[in-house]
Image (cartoon, rainbow, N blue to C red; front, side, top):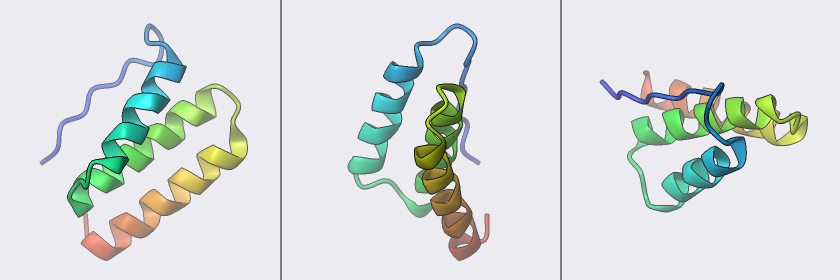
Length: 69
């Protein structure tokens, strides 16, 4: 089980997006890819980046389907 802690209330969303983007770029496992895309999508949602949020959340859903998470 993957454990990811995110606190949207105190963290800087720009830093979060950068961290999730770097995580996606470093060859994560399929399960890690799901969580990185999911939380990056939520971070984009918090800063009203709707297109990026929908793109990442859709990709996370596809990753979830293919890995049976």
